[in-house]
Length: 150
Image (cartoon, rainbow, N blue to C red):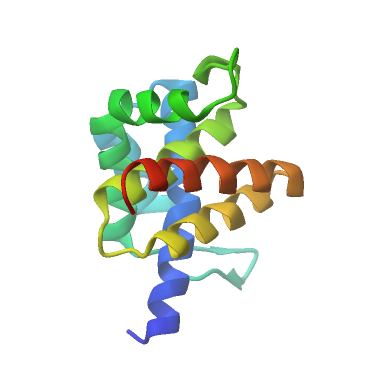
């Protein structure tokens, strides 16, 4: 796999991980069922004859499993970075999953450079939100990375 192909596969995996985490939160889908569903139907697919890039499945699994296993730790880190008066519960549900996945990468994936992880999740945010929210993601994840010494 070339570096750019791997990078694209990881970008797809990040977006899919955010979607899976959102589904898990909204529908309370069991982790194994959730991963199986994404493996079978969503990680490499063609819709209306348009081929989409394949996701790096192991990377996707690591993000989803990692956020699931470390959710409490991640939420404490995020809560500490939010403005006074803000809580995790007040965040948009998609935004929360973007921040959780990005935080997981920053604390658990030393193989991913800090700037790359932050930039990738800013791009994920842009898929769902405007620039203002993307800047919010950048600020929160940068603060988490700084706190964790990355």
